[in-house]
Length: 248
Image (tube, rainbow, N blue to C red; front, top):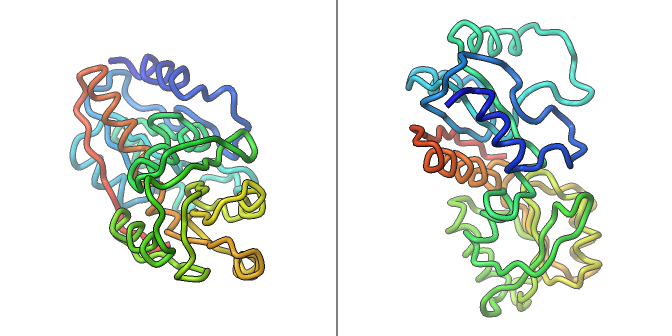
C-alpha cells in the first residue's frame, strides 16, 4: 500500500483529529512511498530503529515518537542521528500517542484490560482516556498484583493493604499517575498505571484505594502490537514487533 493510504487509514481508524495531544500523530518522518513491511515498537529509540531497518521495514509505527511539546526544536545530537538514519534509509516513522491509548479495541487501555482479565464498565478523565471495570471474580490485592506481574512479566510496585478485596479497578497505561484522584472518585478498589509519584503513596494509604505502578513501558507494549497486527491482516502487510526491555 502507499504511505499516504496508511496515514489516512490510521487517522480515520484512531480518530486522531479528535485529540489534543502533546505531539503530532501520524507521519513524523516521511520515507519511501510504498509500504510492504511495517515494524512496530513502543518508542522510536535507536535500538528499535536499528532492528527495524535491519529487518527491512518500510515504515515504523510507535507509541512514543518525536517532536514533543516543549521539546528543544533543534535537530542535533541523538535526534539528528535518529532522523538521519530514517531519511538515509527512506524509512517512514509514524507515531500515535493519545489516540492509541484510547482506541476501544486496539488501544493500550483496551489491550491492557484484556490482558489482565478486566471487564470494561466505563471511561473517565480528560478525553475519556482512562478506563474502569471489574474483575470476573474478587481477589485480594496480593493475588491481583501477582496476576498483574504474570500478565506483564514485570513485578509491579504496589501500595495498599495486601488483604484488601479487589473487585472494581480503574486503569490508564503509561504515565497516568495524575488520574489517581479521579479514579478514587469513581469508587474503585485499585488503580493501575505505569508510574507512581510521591503523593500517590499518601493518597493510597489515606483513602484505602490501592495503587499499582506496573511500568510505563510494560503497560504500553500491547496497543502498538495490536495496531500492527490489524494493519497486516487488513492490507496483507508483513509485520514485526521490536521490543526493548525498559524497567521504567
